[in-house]
Image (cartoon, rainbow, N blue to C red; front, side):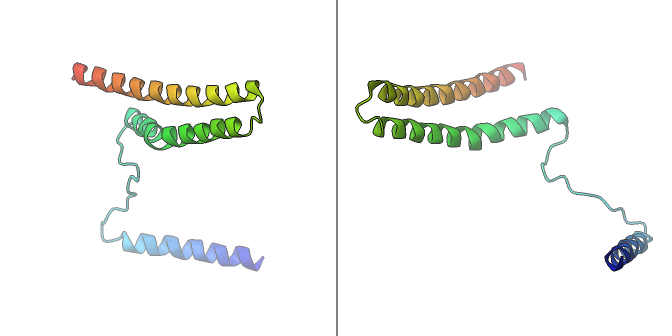
Length: 112
């Protein structure tokens, strides 16, 4: 009960301080941390983040996994082939992502 009372006192005093500081006519606002103005800009920002940060990370993890498959094959041709396919698919998949991003940029430049 004492924690609830202290929390309420803190909230009310914070509200009163905010109200008193705003009495001079100054506006209180929040900064936009994403630096985007619209939903399409936000979507482009998220996609760019995925392409720049997550894409290479996932590709590297998959290549390491494929290499681990090859190293631990122990003479099993099926496991060796699986490792090669994982590496190939990781490289091809990331290449497709990069080509798709390039196509989108080219189309955007042509439409401007």
